[in-house]
Amino acid sequence: MTIDEVDKDIIRVLNKDARLSFREIAQMLSISVGTVSHRVKRMEEQGVIKGYIPEICAEKVGFDFRAIIFLNIAKGKLRDVEAELAKHENLVGVYDITGDFDAVIVGRFENRKHLNTFVKEIQTLEYVERTNTSVVLDVLKESTRVSL
Image: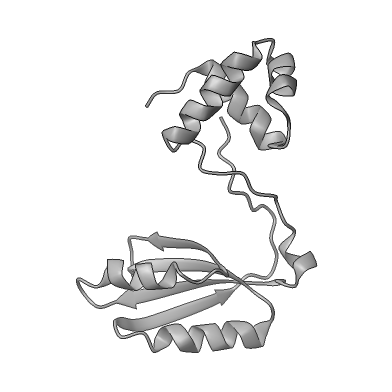
């Protein structure tokens, strides 16, 4: 699917405030409500817009600890291990990577003990050969938004 400038404008507005009504978006962009409605529905159906969620401050809900965990996974079992890891709700990213490791996961944890328990758990997964954990000391920028 290709998106045009009108689609991009709608996405930009939704990125700032996804709670706006189609009428408000239409007024901001000087287009019809029907155009906004049709385009948003099409982008949802085609997977461009995957959902609408509030942006939560992790620290204020008790997840002040972040970690990046690199994994070496037995040959041929990468997808199996990643699928298992993706089930953990405290993980915000599961990625295939190049370099010395096969995968990297990024997670939010309540505290050091929560992270410790999690790392020990993933080290027991059958095909995880090695992990290397880095604790995030400070967050300067963090976003899942795609800027257009």
